[in-house]
Image 1 (spheres, rainbow, N blue to C red):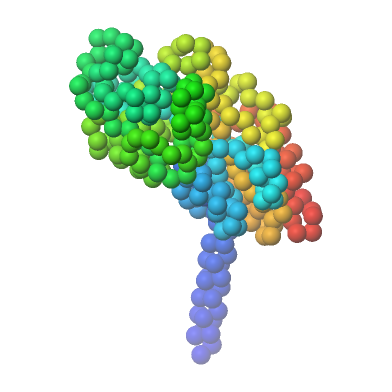
Image 2: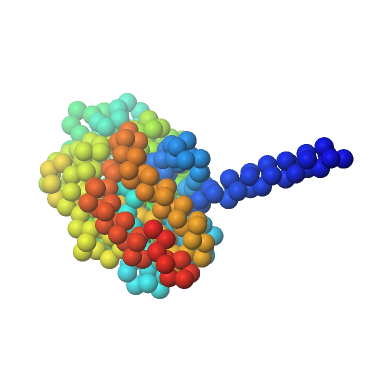
Length: 345
């Protein structure tokens, strides 16, 4: 009987330890744009600390809804919330990582990175005005390229998406007609094309449909060996996507002038600035009902800022500059409190 009681106690202790370990896992949801780097950081963070992250890559719109409903410890969005929206919901916002969005195509015989496109041309494709791959406008940019007499199938996001915000924000800046007819937002009313949920859904449709064009986050395109295009930037230069060009676009970001650090880095000037560069943001409630979990979120991002630059570079993301990290940490200290009003950082 004594031995049996001992076994029950040991078993209960093990179950309690397991429960505590599971409880330590923080939860986040939202943008698909930063998912590859958040997953990589989470893997390394767990190895270093034993604490885990359960991140749902469900799109910025859904992530914003979940953090508002307090069903996750943090939300993630690639479209910065406005100051009045943050205030209304009792949220604070800080940047976590930067990267780029690229156009991808499924065209036989066209090697990755060889096709040249411009923003206004992509806008016309997504407006349904250019419908064939051998259209004069595309041929003029790509002399000598064998372009098929094939229909263009437009692929876009079906869910609320920060990637869509960056893409539509850029196209709205370079095409007045796109701005008027479609506009910039996480979810818009597309006039042509087929939808896919998440980067995964867009990529799957582009890979499945001959003659398709879509847009995804660069690390995702690179990891899955998708055929991307060059894009012409504001200074008239055709560029390949890479972290140096994302860094160039981010160099002029005026973090201190934007409420909630809400900068948008599309269509930035500079010869080497990638035209669809974006910042991914984290959303947390200013008053943390569970201060311990709030602290764990900050520990994860603090660790990532200090130790995650190498992983970010491998995936062609751009880590925040040290000066911006200092600003973010200051915002944590000033704005994130427990129920008694004490800072959790």
